[in-house]
Image (cartoon, rainbow, N blue to C red):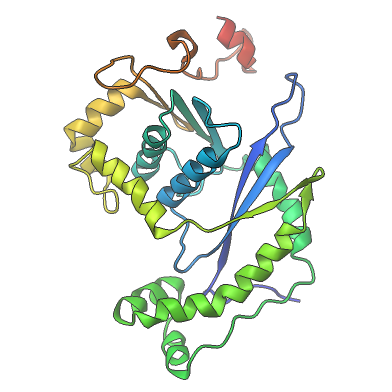
Length: 296
Protein backbone atom coordinates (compact mmCIF):
# COMPACT_ATOMS: atom_id res chain seq x y z
CA UNK A 1 0.00 0.00 0.00
CA UNK A 2 1.04 3.61 -0.48
CA UNK A 3 2.77 4.73 2.70
CA UNK A 4 3.52 8.34 1.73
CA UNK A 5 2.65 10.98 4.33
CA UNK A 6 0.66 14.10 3.47
CA UNK A 7 3.38 16.68 4.05
CA UNK A 8 1.66 18.17 7.08
CA UNK A 9 3.58 15.80 9.30
CA UNK A 10 6.72 13.74 9.04
CA UNK A 11 9.03 11.59 11.12
CA UNK A 12 12.79 11.91 10.77
CA UNK A 13 15.12 9.17 11.95
CA UNK A 14 18.60 10.45 12.75
CA UNK A 15 20.99 7.50 12.68
CA UNK A 16 24.33 7.46 14.49
CA UNK A 17 26.86 4.69 13.98
CA UNK A 18 30.03 4.19 15.97
CA UNK A 19 31.88 1.73 13.73
CA UNK A 20 34.33 -0.92 14.80
CA UNK A 21 37.64 0.04 13.21
CA UNK A 22 38.98 -2.82 11.07
CA UNK A 23 42.39 -4.26 11.88
CA UNK A 24 43.65 -3.89 8.31
CA UNK A 25 43.12 -1.45 5.44
CA UNK A 26 40.97 -3.87 3.43
CA UNK A 27 38.62 -4.52 6.34
CA UNK A 28 34.99 -3.40 6.55
CA UNK A 29 33.74 -0.45 8.58
CA UNK A 30 30.18 -1.75 8.33
CA UNK A 31 29.78 -2.98 11.90
CA UNK A 32 29.44 -1.36 15.26
CA UNK A 33 26.96 0.33 17.56
CA UNK A 34 23.91 1.90 15.88
CA UNK A 35 21.75 4.42 17.71
CA UNK A 36 18.62 6.04 16.33
CA UNK A 37 16.82 9.20 17.34
CA UNK A 38 13.20 9.18 16.15
CA UNK A 39 11.92 12.74 15.92
CA UNK A 40 8.82 14.68 14.98
CA UNK A 41 10.01 16.75 12.02
CA UNK A 42 7.50 19.51 12.77
CA UNK A 43 8.69 20.66 16.20
CA UNK A 44 11.92 18.63 16.45
CA UNK A 45 13.36 19.70 13.11
CA UNK A 46 16.82 18.32 12.39
CA UNK A 47 19.38 21.15 12.50
CA UNK A 48 23.14 21.46 12.78
CA UNK A 49 22.79 22.54 16.41
CA UNK A 50 20.54 19.62 17.34
CA UNK A 51 22.97 17.19 15.73
CA UNK A 52 25.84 18.83 17.60
CA UNK A 53 23.95 18.45 20.89
CA UNK A 54 23.41 14.75 20.14
CA UNK A 55 27.12 14.29 19.36
CA UNK A 56 28.08 15.91 22.66
CA UNK A 57 25.65 13.70 24.58
CA UNK A 58 26.86 10.50 22.93
CA UNK A 59 30.51 11.36 23.52
CA UNK A 60 29.92 12.12 27.20
CA UNK A 61 27.91 8.92 27.70
CA UNK A 62 30.52 6.69 26.03
CA UNK A 63 31.67 4.16 28.67
CA UNK A 64 35.18 4.27 27.17
CA UNK A 65 35.35 8.01 27.73
CA UNK A 66 35.63 10.88 25.30
CA UNK A 67 38.54 10.44 22.91
CA UNK A 68 40.79 13.46 22.16
CA UNK A 69 40.10 13.23 18.41
CA UNK A 70 36.53 13.19 17.10
CA UNK A 71 35.94 12.07 13.49
CA UNK A 72 32.53 12.51 11.89
CA UNK A 73 31.43 11.30 8.44
CA UNK A 74 27.93 12.22 7.29
CA UNK A 75 25.71 12.79 4.29
CA UNK A 76 25.46 16.12 2.52
CA UNK A 77 22.21 17.36 4.04
CA UNK A 78 21.84 21.01 5.03
CA UNK A 79 22.51 20.16 8.68
CA UNK A 80 25.81 18.44 7.75
CA UNK A 81 27.14 20.46 4.80
CA UNK A 82 30.52 21.63 6.06
CA UNK A 83 30.58 24.73 3.84
CA UNK A 84 27.58 26.22 5.68
CA UNK A 85 28.33 28.64 8.51
CA UNK A 86 25.84 27.14 11.00
CA UNK A 87 27.36 23.70 10.48
CA UNK A 88 30.85 25.09 11.05
CA UNK A 89 29.71 26.86 14.21
CA UNK A 90 28.05 23.69 15.48
CA UNK A 91 31.30 21.75 14.94
CA UNK A 92 33.29 24.42 16.75
CA UNK A 93 30.80 24.13 19.64
CA UNK A 94 31.33 20.35 19.80
CA UNK A 95 35.10 20.90 19.75
CA UNK A 96 34.93 23.32 22.69
CA UNK A 97 32.25 21.53 24.74
CA UNK A 98 34.14 18.23 24.63
CA UNK A 99 37.58 19.79 25.05
CA UNK A 100 38.88 17.93 22.00
CA UNK A 101 42.40 18.04 20.64
CA UNK A 102 41.07 17.75 17.10
CA UNK A 103 37.79 17.39 15.22
CA UNK A 104 37.51 16.15 11.63
CA UNK A 105 34.14 16.46 9.88
CA UNK A 106 33.72 15.07 6.40
CA UNK A 107 30.70 14.65 4.15
CA UNK A 108 30.06 12.50 1.14
CA UNK A 109 30.20 14.05 -2.32
CA UNK A 110 26.90 14.28 -4.23
CA UNK A 111 25.77 10.84 -5.34
CA UNK A 112 28.39 9.11 -3.21
CA UNK A 113 26.48 8.60 0.04
CA UNK A 114 26.74 4.85 -0.47
CA UNK A 115 30.35 5.14 0.72
CA UNK A 116 29.13 6.20 4.16
CA UNK A 117 28.70 3.01 6.25
CA UNK A 118 25.76 4.40 8.18
CA UNK A 119 23.79 4.86 4.94
CA UNK A 120 23.84 1.08 4.51
CA UNK A 121 22.01 0.72 7.82
CA UNK A 122 18.89 2.01 6.06
CA UNK A 123 18.46 -1.39 4.43
CA UNK A 124 18.13 -2.92 7.89
CA UNK A 125 15.79 -0.20 9.17
CA UNK A 126 13.46 -0.69 6.21
CA UNK A 127 12.92 -4.27 7.35
CA UNK A 128 11.49 -2.99 10.62
CA UNK A 129 9.00 -0.76 8.82
CA UNK A 130 7.50 -3.52 6.67
CA UNK A 131 3.78 -4.20 7.23
CA UNK A 132 3.50 -1.25 9.59
CA UNK A 133 0.44 1.03 9.66
CA UNK A 134 0.72 4.43 11.33
CA UNK A 135 -2.01 6.76 12.52
CA UNK A 136 -1.81 9.73 14.85
CA UNK A 137 -4.33 10.37 17.62
CA UNK A 138 -7.14 12.76 16.72
CA UNK A 139 -6.96 16.14 18.44
CA UNK A 140 -9.78 18.44 19.54
CA UNK A 141 -12.13 19.77 16.86
CA UNK A 142 -10.67 23.25 17.29
CA UNK A 143 -7.08 22.10 16.79
CA UNK A 144 -8.03 19.80 13.92
CA UNK A 145 -9.77 22.73 12.23
CA UNK A 146 -6.67 24.83 12.68
CA UNK A 147 -4.52 22.05 11.26
CA UNK A 148 -6.68 21.75 8.14
CA UNK A 149 -5.78 25.32 7.25
CA UNK A 150 -2.07 24.45 7.35
CA UNK A 151 -0.65 23.18 4.10
CA UNK A 152 2.84 22.28 5.30
CA UNK A 153 5.01 21.69 8.35
CA UNK A 154 6.20 25.29 8.12
CA UNK A 155 2.57 26.44 8.32
CA UNK A 156 2.05 24.36 11.46
CA UNK A 157 5.09 25.95 13.11
CA UNK A 158 3.85 29.39 12.16
CA UNK A 159 0.36 28.65 13.48
CA UNK A 160 1.82 27.50 16.80
CA UNK A 161 3.23 30.99 17.38
CA UNK A 162 -0.31 32.33 17.72
CA UNK A 163 -1.77 29.16 19.25
CA UNK A 164 0.59 27.88 22.00
CA UNK A 165 -1.65 24.89 22.74
CA UNK A 166 -0.98 23.50 19.28
CA UNK A 167 2.54 22.34 20.19
CA UNK A 168 1.39 20.17 23.09
CA UNK A 169 -1.66 18.90 21.22
CA UNK A 170 0.45 17.91 18.22
CA UNK A 171 3.09 16.25 20.40
CA UNK A 172 0.42 14.19 22.15
CA UNK A 173 -1.17 13.25 18.84
CA UNK A 174 2.06 12.12 17.18
CA UNK A 175 3.57 10.37 20.23
CA UNK A 176 2.07 6.90 19.48
CA UNK A 177 3.49 7.05 15.95
CA UNK A 178 6.96 7.86 17.25
CA UNK A 179 6.69 5.06 19.82
CA UNK A 180 5.62 2.56 17.15
CA UNK A 181 8.51 3.41 14.83
CA UNK A 182 11.03 3.43 17.67
CA UNK A 183 9.70 0.09 18.89
CA UNK A 184 10.14 -1.42 15.45
CA UNK A 185 13.72 -0.16 15.21
CA UNK A 186 14.57 -1.44 18.70
CA UNK A 187 13.86 -5.04 17.60
CA UNK A 188 16.56 -4.90 14.92
CA UNK A 189 20.24 -5.79 15.01
CA UNK A 190 23.26 -5.00 12.87
CA UNK A 191 25.52 -8.04 12.75
CA UNK A 192 24.14 -9.28 16.10
CA UNK A 193 24.63 -5.86 17.74
CA UNK A 194 21.22 -4.59 18.97
CA UNK A 195 20.10 -1.21 17.67
CA UNK A 196 19.24 1.20 20.48
CA UNK A 197 16.89 4.18 20.61
CA UNK A 198 17.94 7.61 21.83
CA UNK A 199 15.71 10.25 23.38
CA UNK A 200 15.23 13.24 21.12
CA UNK A 201 17.44 16.26 21.74
CA UNK A 202 15.77 18.74 24.08
CA UNK A 203 15.53 22.48 23.55
CA UNK A 204 17.86 22.88 26.53
CA UNK A 205 20.55 20.75 24.90
CA UNK A 206 20.26 22.69 21.65
CA UNK A 207 20.44 25.98 23.56
CA UNK A 208 23.62 24.80 25.29
CA UNK A 209 25.29 24.44 21.89
CA UNK A 210 24.25 27.94 20.87
CA UNK A 211 25.40 29.32 24.23
CA UNK A 212 28.83 27.77 23.68
CA UNK A 213 29.01 29.56 20.32
CA UNK A 214 27.95 32.89 21.82
CA UNK A 215 30.50 32.55 24.63
CA UNK A 216 33.29 32.14 22.07
CA UNK A 217 31.95 34.69 19.56
CA UNK A 218 29.81 37.28 21.42
CA UNK A 219 29.11 39.21 18.24
CA UNK A 220 27.38 36.28 16.55
CA UNK A 221 23.75 35.24 16.97
CA UNK A 222 23.80 31.48 16.17
CA UNK A 223 20.10 31.37 15.33
CA UNK A 224 20.22 33.98 12.57
CA UNK A 225 23.88 34.24 11.54
CA UNK A 226 24.82 34.31 7.87
CA UNK A 227 28.18 33.59 6.28
CA UNK A 228 28.64 37.27 5.46
CA UNK A 229 27.96 38.30 9.06
CA UNK A 230 30.39 35.71 10.43
CA UNK A 231 33.18 36.70 8.06
CA UNK A 232 32.86 40.30 9.24
CA UNK A 233 33.17 39.23 12.89
CA UNK A 234 36.81 39.73 13.90
CA UNK A 235 36.71 37.17 16.73
CA UNK A 236 35.32 34.46 14.47
CA UNK A 237 37.65 35.17 11.53
CA UNK A 238 40.79 35.18 13.67
CA UNK A 239 39.77 32.02 15.56
CA UNK A 240 39.02 30.11 12.36
CA UNK A 241 42.30 31.21 10.77
CA UNK A 242 44.17 29.94 13.82
CA UNK A 243 42.33 26.65 14.42
CA UNK A 244 40.53 25.49 11.26
CA UNK A 245 41.14 24.13 7.81
CA UNK A 246 38.34 24.04 5.24
CA UNK A 247 37.98 22.10 2.02
CA UNK A 248 35.02 21.32 -0.25
CA UNK A 249 33.97 18.23 1.70
CA UNK A 250 36.11 18.54 4.82
CA UNK A 251 36.23 20.84 7.85
CA UNK A 252 38.93 20.32 10.48
CA UNK A 253 39.59 21.95 13.84
CA UNK A 254 42.58 21.49 16.13
CA UNK A 255 44.16 23.12 19.15
CA UNK A 256 46.57 25.88 18.23
CA UNK A 257 49.30 25.26 20.82
CA UNK A 258 48.91 28.72 22.39
CA UNK A 259 48.40 28.15 26.16
CA UNK A 260 46.54 31.46 26.43
CA UNK A 261 44.02 30.22 23.86
CA UNK A 262 43.81 26.43 24.15
CA UNK A 263 44.51 24.01 26.98
CA UNK A 264 47.39 21.59 26.54
CA UNK A 265 46.47 18.76 24.16
CA UNK A 266 46.17 15.20 25.43
CA UNK A 267 48.09 13.90 22.43
CA UNK A 268 51.57 15.04 21.37
CA UNK A 269 51.31 18.04 18.98
CA UNK A 270 53.09 16.12 16.21
CA UNK A 271 50.17 13.67 16.11
CA UNK A 272 47.64 16.43 15.46
CA UNK A 273 48.30 16.71 11.73
CA UNK A 274 45.69 17.81 9.22
CA UNK A 275 44.01 15.06 7.24
CA UNK A 276 45.73 15.57 3.87
CA UNK A 277 44.05 16.48 0.62
CA UNK A 278 43.65 13.81 -2.08
CA UNK A 279 46.72 13.64 -4.31
CA UNK A 280 47.03 12.12 -7.81
CA UNK A 281 49.53 9.36 -8.46
CA UNK A 282 52.21 9.51 -11.19
CA UNK A 283 49.71 8.56 -13.89
CA UNK A 284 47.22 11.24 -12.90
CA UNK A 285 44.41 8.73 -13.31
CA UNK A 286 44.14 7.57 -9.70
CA UNK A 287 44.60 9.00 -6.24
CA UNK A 288 47.43 7.98 -3.99
CA UNK A 289 46.43 5.75 -1.09
CA UNK A 290 46.14 7.65 2.16
CA UNK A 291 49.02 5.75 3.77
CA UNK A 292 51.31 6.89 0.92
CA UNK A 293 50.27 10.53 1.37
CA UNK A 294 50.87 10.36 5.12
CA UNK A 295 54.26 8.77 4.58
CA UNK A 296 55.29 11.69 2.39
